[in-house]
Image 1 (cartoon, rainbow, N blue to C red):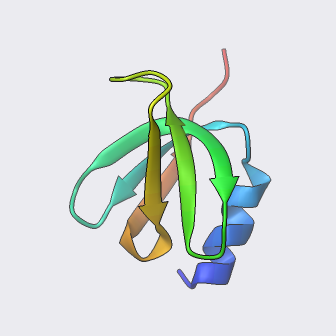
Image 2 (tube, rainbow, N blue to C red):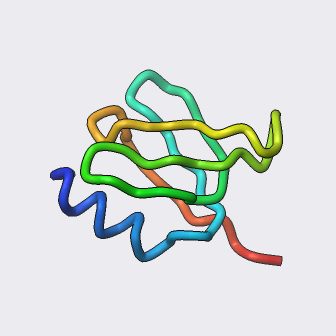
Length: 69
């Protein structure tokens, strides 16, 4: 996906918990905290809760929204 499309997609889900898979095979689960034109910031909800992870749009392969309880 082009960067602008990814940015718009993540803006729709700001504050929601998402699973993001990267091209390298890593899977990150967290709440979308910040979105720029180059990267997103996730606040981890599993593993190390509260830890921030920054993912470049060029490294993202796919994203899935986690259903709220």
